[in-house]
Amino acid sequence: MSRTNALGKLAELETAVEHLTETEYDKFRRWFLERDWEAWDRDIETDSASGKLDFLVQEVRDAKRSGKLRDL
Image (tube, rainbow, N blue to C red; front, side):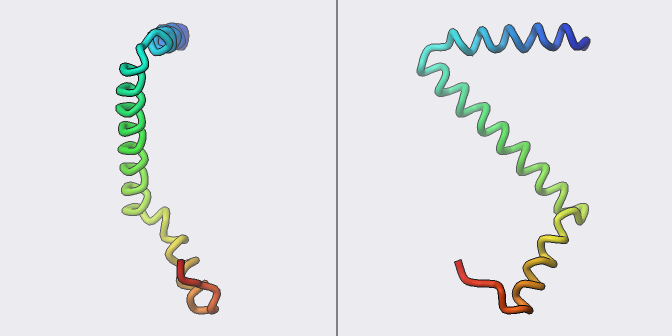
């Protein structure tokens, strides 16, 4: 898809969303947010499985070892 075509589709989507009723917009918003969170969850799972987040575990271990970790 060309950049111009993609921008045209985006403009169409924006116009369509602007013309939704409040109820339709609420449904669309919930659908979009759920879709966004699912993508976020997949990204986190992929990053975790690949070791990209191992540094966070190490930071917690270091904080615990140095006594800087506190209960929430």
